[in-house]
Length: 371
Image (cartoon, rainbow, N blue to C red; front, top):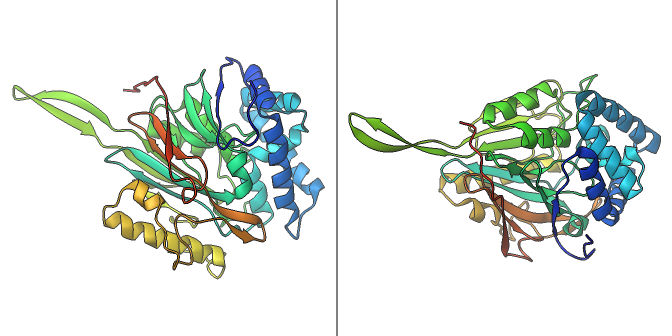
């Protein structure tokens, strides 16, 4: 299978049953995009004052060891991606721990994601705000063997998506507030894939995040679909439901923090009011402005789609933004996506929603119930 290098968000299905074969598929089909993605991140890393490639690769060696102790299957898949795409294995590791590397380099990104979950409709949404290059690098990924649907980056095992049990994940960049001497050596993107591979319930998903360690910055909003059921009471038949569930999972660097049933998040920690490490920086004002705007729209019962697409050219930090030049390159909303965890569908704009407003739908045909 070959893909057009100019296609925005192509759909790619992995049919292999083993980690090694799946990694080979990934690396072969996406070799050109993997190469470009590595070049983008190498450039991003190099813009930091404390950049040193030997330091980056040393970090990747630590994460490589962490992954090897955690899962031979994931390590084999990553190594197979590296071999089939003809890349240094440590740079494939770098793609999977780029969030942690950027935090180690004190990246301080100003434009990042907005995520939210509607428990009534079981819709989990995200605006992925990042460098414009990824309009032509990211892809829609169906992993057939595990029944997972993802919006993913080349060379990366896990990102934004859901599984056939109706467990969905999103991810935000957040600076670590605690400089742990022993940050988790399991990258957050690997934990995301683990959740989608293994979790059948919200509690199982949260347990995976907790067991995988405190991380080094970042946030995940996890959603679970609503189960409808019939029951009898006093000889009458009733239709009831177990309301959709969600949890904000924050990774400040010392301990995983859980904020249950909070439906939205931007790029500052909510478990504490102490964001002193970033409160005087533009990225905090960016995050706070978007958070307050989401809160206002949410309280006015606006739909997830209308919130994600909200913008006003008078706003300094709109939720949905056009690409603008920054020191890190052209940054803006790469795509908007809405996952219906009950129906197992993903609706996504193929590119910046203010330029490409149409949503395209992808669906998992298989639905499984953990109960």
